[in-house]
Image (cartoon, rainbow, N blue to C red; front, side, top):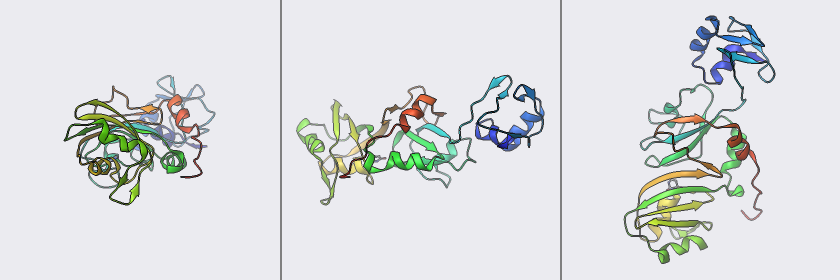
Length: 237
Ligand code: URA
């Protein structure tokens, strides 16, 4: 059981004060009856709660897909934190993984620590696909070493990565881990330089083309189910 105002705030209907007003205005019903008391207790899993006649589905955990713009950091605090882009900021949200300040694209925002940990664990080899733009022309023979597993900075061995060259200065790269500045360091190791980086996919979840830079949306039920589907662990990782 939880308070009605909290449930609506967690479902993205505004701040606690905004949803209180909404409830008092008579827009909210619980099992068919209008409820005007923000402190009313509801069974979030079983009661049918509706706003202006439309039933809402409560999710214990929030999951958002953000099209991260450049200039924001993957932290939970500070003026340049990606969380400043999310209106539902009061739910213990955090970014699931890290993109560099100058990297754009798909970043998941959640308050679900357990699933986030699983998706980020190197054991699970979750695929991350990036669009990479580089300074010097790309050659197949320079990139082949990525498929075998390149050693960066003379000591750190990367797992094999797949790539597809799509233009002279552009390729798609798929990695299954997330070392610090990994892609920039991989290209530096073959004498090139990353000039643009955008994450397009994580596991089967593709960045929604309709999201403008800086926009976000909740994950759909089927997208979340797919993220939850276990990736077998690799005992050697
Ligand atoms: N690799 C990088 O170098 N930076 C990112 O933001 C992500 C992967």
